[in-house]
Length: 142
Image (cartoon, helix red, strand yellow):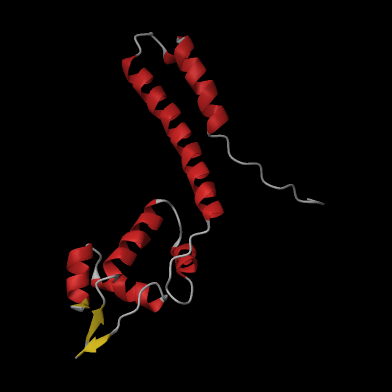
């Protein structure tokens, strides 16, 4: 087993050494030891860093990702959280599709005024339904 120092991990993963040190600080990764002043990592750290990057891309926080690795460092992903995140992404995709369609229509519409265009009005109505902010809880006595 060939160990990698922090510089090699940074080079192979594309993650800056400062971020790797932060990940170590919050317990996401652990060096096996040191060679001089340089941290030494098992090559499996690259897989773990890929999983962390995937989790970040999916919208999980570093704390949520850390919780998925547990104390022993073994991955234990709660499937219900994955389903919830996938549902969130699906809602975001729907909103982005509506926005994309509206922008394309506005760019290509030949109507003298977009407000006169029935398609634009329909897109606006759909956009307002999909982008409406969530209701805040009412404050009693306010």
